[in-house]
Image (cartoon, rainbow over all chains, first blue to last red; front, side, top):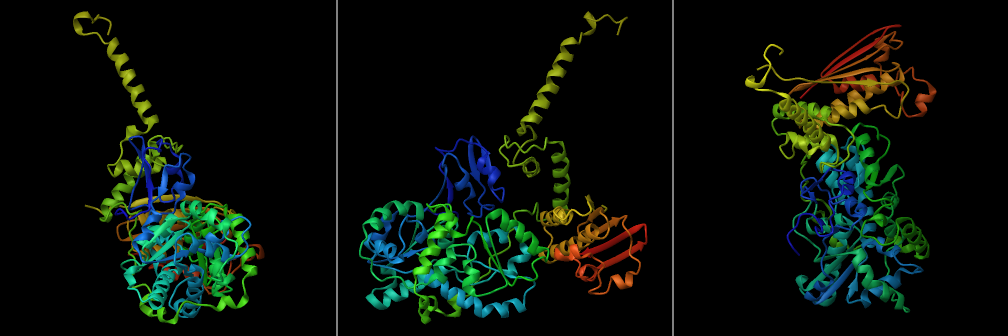
Length: 442
Length: 141
């Protein structure tokens, strides 16, 4: 895997330099330069909106090649519960899990099982955490949300639930279980996650709240689907691999986490624009009655991830139907107790607030910049056409003040300047030096 | 060199709940751009938001002005609404003259003014019945 801090990246050959992605990006992280989209790394939160919107499929998520599983003696797949909703006419979770084993893994470990454990733990700590907090506790299951808060909502970092995500816990539990069962060394065991979104790819490589990594490879669900589908279709005799209940597999849909915790006063919000609106309101103290807020960047929850194949509404319906078939007592299953240490469950470090909004570290400079931005912004046409490569006139004004763009990058401004020059030239053409000028008639 | 001050002015229109909070949201955004601390931003935006909502519910709309300096923000909210007859009573927690419609929207719990005062370092409320109300608050960083 190449060294990256983001998994969302650009396929420059496919990029036409159009303005679709710059307009859609919730953190204004993209500019078009030299005919290609450029992602500003410190602004990107890996939400994948640009991947979703790009008509030329020029934005992609970097994942690992599936062949890397061969570097390990014992290979374990961690299917995200959203994977369960991707296959037409499959009603039995075991068919998908068995197909995973048949496609080259020695074992599987359901992320949905770890989700149940994380829900139990959240339920335990919720009252204590809430007592110290102003406002609701905010779920950290979606890495996009945590990053969004880190760059835009400084005051809400305290409210973020600082616990392990289901996929990380599943990885730790799967490895521990395999070490016990096979007697192999931990590093001979490969743990691989099949991800519905780029944010989870990034967060698996660069964990939030912890150092190091617990996952050996991450595959994009849409790429993996191509390999898995024919095997799923051929799987006739499923093994009894399923251990998670409807409580765990529902995490893939918006509202699933809150329900799994069993908290009645929770609000579930999905879609990045809705999330931004709600975070603004939480910041203004408007969510005093909610105790837990579940936020997911993708429409419908993880089933709406931009690397999922099926549309989120169909996937959700399938997962719900599958859930009905799962035995009730699976809902109380949990990962092995040996994994439930404080060091594993609780964040070992808190990510820093790294404002992308702040104009300058020196407040007087920031104030001066802000005045200039407002002044320049007032002279721009305000139609946010994107032709300058910035998502809005205001963003261009900011870029100009920060030295990253020029006023003439605005095609309307350029036209104004050209027209000014043209008039000046016309005047100059009329001008007669004294030897040729009739001085009696100035 | 005299400290630089930024001034922003917003019209707050009455009975438009959809737009209520736009002025405080804009000021909050400005404060984030200027790199104020999370706590300072929180206090300012809560106080200003509550005040703005008051202007919408009770004041018949008005003007919100923000004076932003390096180490403080001064917010002045001016309306030409019915005015407040008894300021001491209005400042009591739980007291509200909001209509049932407004309460159904989750406002009018009578916590607005006390909360604004709690968040502010300086708080001044002047009002004349039939003329309107001026609320001035300062939050210091």
